[in-house]
Length: 192
Image (cartoon, rainbow, N blue to C red):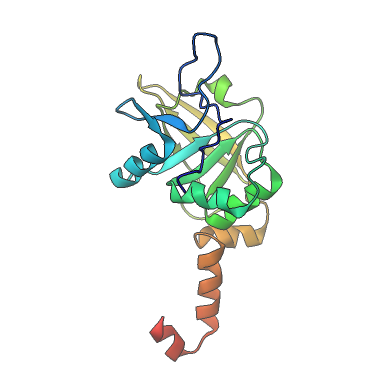
């Protein structure tokens, strides 16, 4: 889990540019609202201790090179409950769903850059309180530090009815366990 988001090629846009105009690379971020720079793992542990779920924003082909299931497990274990990006690598998107992480995709010309997302915002994901259905449009509200808000719609990238079931059960493992326990007799359920 500590290595999740730790690749040296990651360029966290929350961090300032260097004197040569390049971005700091590696698994660093700012903890909000303190503004303290630290490794992503440490910031994630602080958010978890504070009871603050996090949202990951990204660009195109998010998850490329990370299609093994560990990348999605790490995302979940670091406290991310949603990932909002321009596009997903196919297998990684499915793995996020199987871990119970909400994959959301910008629509139209929206992006981190066009929305001016800096990383100090809070985000409300609306319209999923009573369940989800494949590829629905989901409103999100971005609350900025200056008190302004921006509301946009994103596309829910839960693409099939079985993925809806996985997500609503918190991922594939809880789904399968509930299925097994549901078929088991009363003595097995009592022991579980």
